[in-house]
Length: 322
Ligand code: ATP
Image (cartoon, rainbow, N blue to C red):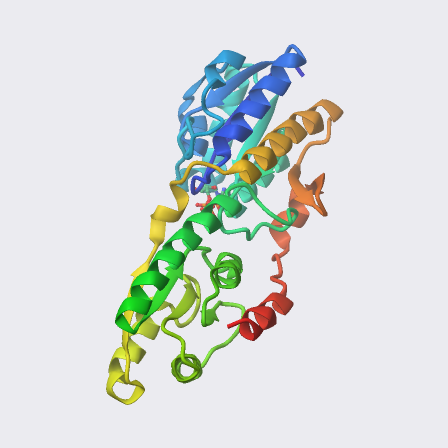
């Protein structure tokens, strides 16, 4: 391998820069040249590919977002788009590609692999919904941002005897919401993996107040059937009967924008280096992730065809600790 490229794709995640840096520097040590691709698969199709030296990635380890830019590229989902991307890679003499991203992005990696291009994925998404990595780059930082919001909402909730619904990201995965509820000491949690009756949530809050709590927080995953907006309107309709006011806070993209914490910086550095090692071994078409605290590879075929399961024992734990 003499020349590789690296791109970031899909939603940005804190730690992506640390992963880019690790790829560039561990490849440079081997005497390989590294090229960066601007804006994910879109830049690959348009040939927005440029040399990225070890010094170019100085000062980015601690920064959120991605210096390469990211995009969602509908064209890349087509065969024609994928072939255009491979043409660009060939034009630049690139022999291997590292794709840093989540589920959709790794489906794209698999498409390139099926076309015979040497590609390795790095598990990065704040949603933690990627099979093949127990934890993905960005989750820990996003979780800490959600926690900061919950801690603050608790203070204002206590002052006004007001309940709060906090909606956190995660697409159709409840991991972030569940972890935020345990770490934030929420009174209830609503996730897509567990069916919920809105009245049951309402009664949990009523009981919390009856037990003398000054605040009541419900953490809701954005992908839950009863998301914050739907639950909010249920509570609004039954406000008189329930006897308390409820406010909805949707955290949204705030969760993505933080600077990566120590955990994500280290995880991203390890996985970025792991991707270069996989390319060196000639192990293509795999996702580099963390399994049982070890940097591990899983075939992309397996990654894409499996759904990551959430540990429902943690849901039971959240209910016990409210
Ligand atoms: P996150 O979940 O953190 O937002 P992601 O990687 O899952 O990240 P997506 O928007 O789902 O984000 O995917 C990113 C890009 O990957 C898409 O814009 C598209 O270019 C490519 N992609 C997604 N699905 C496919 C597919 N089925 N085939 C080829 N490419 C795909």
